[in-house]
Length: 225
Ligand code: 5RP
Image (cartoon, rainbow, N blue to C red; front, top):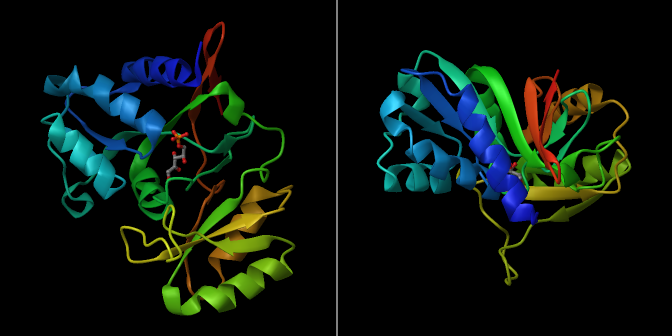
């Protein structure tokens, strides 16, 4: 199976976690996009969705799925999203698609986090994928110095093919930190969260996944945490 076929398979499997009559939280990225396309087929069963990015909101609306403002929603039964890396305990690196802050907010409201990923995302130790950190632009250099002091190699994310900084949906910038071997994801998440100017760090360990549907050649494997 190709990587896209694996993503498609886990996206289809995630439909089993959708709770009828409820609001669903929807993540961002190529795997989440496959999920949105699957969700469209059963859209009559849900009340609507909360999106973790403008891109996801546009795709949901394009399928005729009602997108709700998080402020108008009391509860989210399930949040479905991809990951850049996930461990066997459900800790993740996310933010390759630059939506980490809203993903973290929507996930924090959800009763259950279902991660959908192709099998290449399962790792023993987080950190081979550069860790995304969203920052306020005026704090960029100061935060980069602090991240370097933690042993990483921070690099400002640029617009693809350009020399300008990439700007997130929130008006933030993204620093990608290479070279970290993250032995204690919860401790590092807490430490980076406390650096002034950090909007969010792409470590999802304090609130990790509850379930991971992993695509492999033999089918979809379910990990529960
Ligand atoms: C976006 C994310 C994505 O979930 C992550 O980058 C995985 O993306 P993909 O499904 O395209 O591999 O965190 O901010």
